[in-house]
Length: 114
Image (cartoon, rainbow, N blue to C red; front, side, top):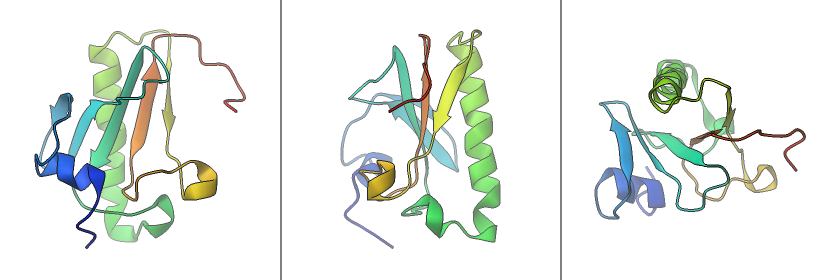
């Protein structure tokens, strides 16, 4: 298991974050580099370095992350829609080696994203 990981340090409360949701499987917090009025990161508590490294046993936690996104979107009033993004590896825009989902909303999110 990777022990020098920004998100793991947030899970372990070694680094402060503006946490908006937590349960036994995942944690969600406001992104410090917002790309939209609502920009929340949803991370599993289990360290999964990249989307490419998902295994069959991770299906439940990844599904749970999606349900947390739905719950947060409703709580935040994102009735007009929102975007979920999972970046994979460096070329995909992943900067932290810990699977995470971006919940973006609160404005019109044009396509393509860039």
